[in-house]
Image 1 (cartoon, rainbow, N blue to C red):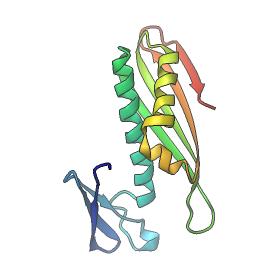
Image 2: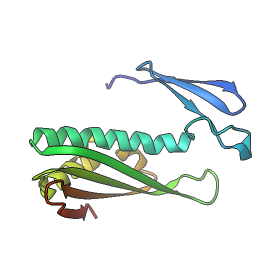
Image 3: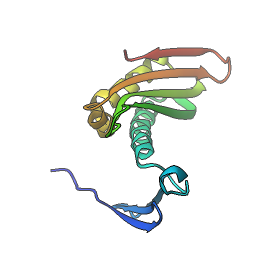
Image 4: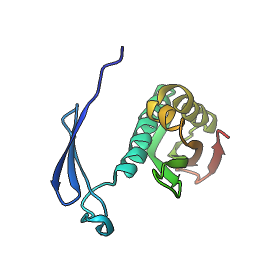
Length: 153
């Protein structure tokens, strides 16, 4: 059985909560002023997108490094669309991987994204049970400015 993770979320004041996880790291959660918050931290639903971006990002960069791709910068952009009615779950999420470097193979990036999306990233597997997740990538050669794009769809 996989090692368990945990988090404790404690009310600070208003709608602000401090969360501490198994790792010992802390993050502040809050809401906007319209529901009693002060906009002092992440929204809980934003954290789901952050978790997905971090999970797939760590997979992809690890795989690209094993493939010996010369990555000079890497960014994961995650955008979610939510249902109109409560509980306002994510219905569609777009994950875009932007990889810059020298001589990077777009096929290697596509394969790394695919492995993360279909095999390694538990956040993607879990959120994919409720929302359609679209995976796209952009590869930019920093020397020639040549750009290639693709998706798993």
